[in-house]
Length: 170
Image 1: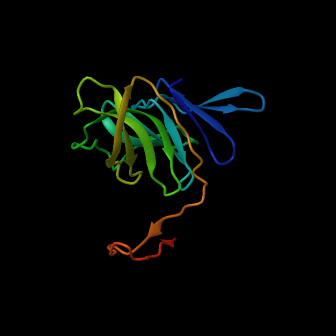
Image 2: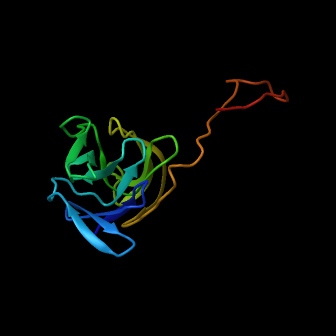
Image 3: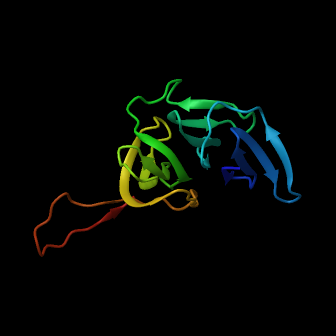
């Protein structure tokens, strides 16, 4: 088993050997959902917006989603890998309150490391934005609660030194 995620109903899904399975945590029974898919992922994450499970394949380098009812995999976007993608395997997949996937991944342009970059993945396009670089690791995991309060702040684009300005929270 490479990764696991809970859905909004408390179902626990695990993924390994390109196969999605659901574990009933009350009696620990295991159900295989569908058949082995084409793509593997070091971790999976449930999207509370569209009720799909997402994974990142390091080979080929692409984002895909899994239907939790059938196990069917669908590449994001469309049916082809992103040719511009330099990202290898990623671990610690999770959604933030803004609906982005956050992961700690491997930027293939940084040599002699494994997973060393915190990234944001757009679940609609599969496009990755690097957020920062940290220590290289071979394995990692992470989680968050995507049901948290979403707050973004805005303020004037410029201010004079010593002046007072206000933040607006949305």
